[in-house]
Image: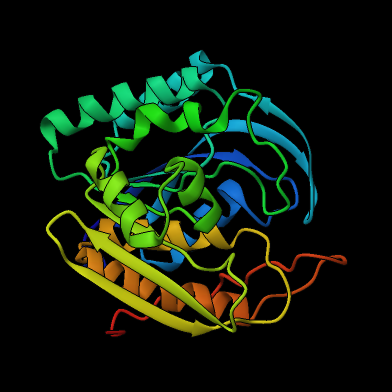
Amino acid sequence: MAGLRQAPTAEVAPMAKRPCVLVFAGADPSGGAGVHADVQAIAAAGAHALPVITVLTVQDNNRVHAIHPVPVEQVRAQAEALVATIPIAAVKIGIVGSRANALYIAALLTALKSTQPDLPVILDPVLASGHGDALTREDAVAVIAPLLAHATLLTPNLPEAQALCPGVAGPAAQAAALLARGATHVLIKGGHGAADMIVNQWFAADGSSRTWHSPRLPGEFHGSGCTLASAIAGRLAAGDTMQDAIDKGLFFCDRALAQAFAIAPGQAIPARSSTIDKEIQ
């Protein structure tokens, strides 16, 4: 119509993008560990989680009362719907529930690495809950065995390192044994020790190593291992070097534990709501 002008079209800023981390983990109805911890920690690291549920658990913030592994056909369907359309910048693996699931994930990693040979794969080899409750109906070490050679980074705690390396004493020797099985980096976590200082030790296949010390905090925490591994995965997806990703992940995890909150007697829930500071060195 004559005399009317169309308002100028406002320029729309390009939508921000986040790198995606494909996650294989169990569902924890207490909201403290497993996929819930993974989603929160990966978001804090500046990435976006794509969670594939491998196990349904019956648990609270202290004990695992029952486990229900997701059939491999359903794990495959979840994962393949994601990788068909979404670029994957990193993969984080927690509990897988069954050897069939582990074998499928190993095959998927082989396929992904055929086009992304540098794809970071973080394997948190969870063999039992913090109180020793089973997280698979099979032999836990045998279940994750197919995944060890695919790991860019393994993050065992002290009992897990011992179980994965029977007869091998000490973190340095255990890391060497795990590196010989195909992992590129190993971070042995010291949280299950008894000393006042927690010692976390990183070993790389190229001979690099570093040790971090932090004061032991009072109390027990639900999902601390998931928090750390996922924070590292998120930073690797964002492009950090391995050492920087571990450094920032440890800082974030320590802060989350220091600010943990209670939902019931027993293990506290790490506060994963703050963002990882990209300027941490």
